Image (cartoon, rainbow, N blue to C red):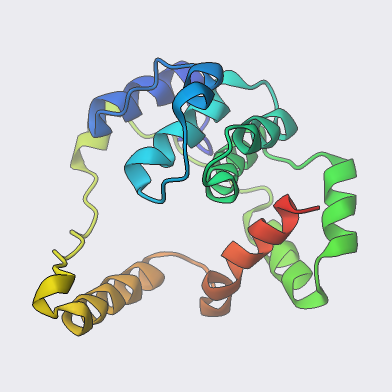
Length: 185
């Protein structure tokens, strides 16, 4: 939606409607009660809230980090949305990234830039959002010794998702490290 040119209000309304996230809070309200939590229900809405309440890429990242808790994950999510929405990383941040990251990680950054620069995206109709289908995550009961079964099912899902996106496999394995290192600059 951010790439397609949706307004922040449209994004907020669609995400609230489809996923039931409470996006009415402000970052200050989130910060008062936020703690380290790795579930998507406690990181994704907070990241979206940071994006919705900030006016640029850098402020989105800083606000996400200021929440505390699982700050690197929230900032990665918020930064990804903001990067898509604003279509650029400020020059001074890009310079820091270039200075701090290893050459192989910078190669991945440049690959993303090359692949997505100048692409145009057609705005999806809000009605079409109801037809989005994501693979179900398998149920997992570690007490029943289902770890191997769970991991096999997750490998199938990840394999499917990897075939649906135009991104090289090595990038998936290094992208989280790239974003975490960037946040530690």
